View 1 (tube, rainbow, N blue to C red):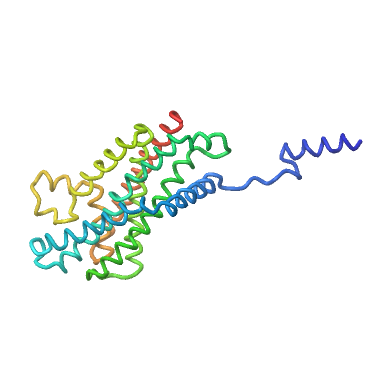
View 2 (tube, rainbow, N blue to C red):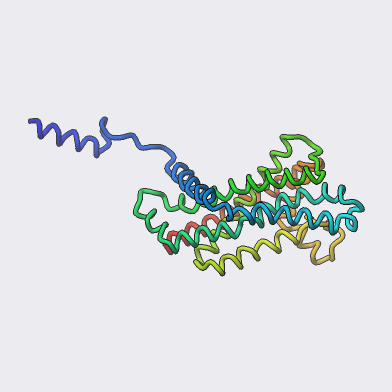
Length: 277
């Protein structure tokens, strides 16, 4: 009688009866955040991986302001006000993109992802966790950039809420575009190729914009590209949010491009990862 009752209780728990453990909700989000925490732990133990995201934007800001400020805007202070929103977007688009791909390639080669496959972890969370960790690194880079910008004389001309909106818009766009680097990493699986491609891919997007100079001063072919370039929309949106001006159109375009990049590159990266891992 006792053994029969025990067996019935075991079947009840297995079948999801009253004694069965309650499944925890949101498995994709939970596992992604856990894997993002793992990636950030690696960064804390090896802070050198943050250097490109921290140093490169600051280097561009200082060089552009003091080399071209007088020629483009007449004074370094006016040019700093014009340039800073573009460097803010550059921080999330260019800096850190290489690290995103390299982290994935290294984990794939070391067999880390193979161990994850043997666990009850959604495969999408393996990639999402890495990209979420990089988004947090972008936050650190943006804080450093604002600190250096304020030390040089940059000032937000709108308000704190608008500055937060500009920062969130830039980080969200960088998060969406980083899935292109993830796709490259999954397909190539080679550190050298991923470093080269991941560094070169954003350049046409970043420098074919109104970041350093108004689009009206460019040749016709470059102006035509700058006007349709998605990064230009993000820069103009951030410029309006930080300095004042029309923002509805640029913000809407920025959000649309971000959603499109996330949908296309994110889907392709996940499909490629499931096929090749």
